[in-house]
Image (cartoon, rainbow, N blue to C red):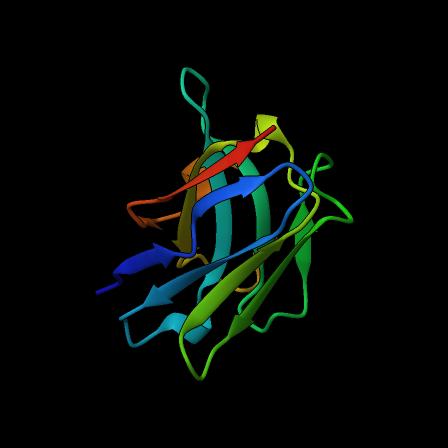
Length: 127
């Protein structure tokens, strides 16, 4: 069973940084691709970043490239999202997600590809 718990959200000024963490209590974490999504009030959930099971492949939304970095530590069953240069429009609930799809399948950016979701952590960027 996979249970994802996000942490690290909070209030930050525009231009600031935060590091989100996602802990997985399952036994097969190292075989899952992991992703981060976000959802602002009144908007659809949107893709932020994803990382392969080995950490060797990562993708980012164009809007966060160069500012956000996804990483994982399979020994600790953790995935991270380091965010810098935050903008007010990036205020949202950030969700961690896991996909149990075969590692042979390329990483996907759509929410439907992910099988498990955390409860989310609020990130508020003030001006």
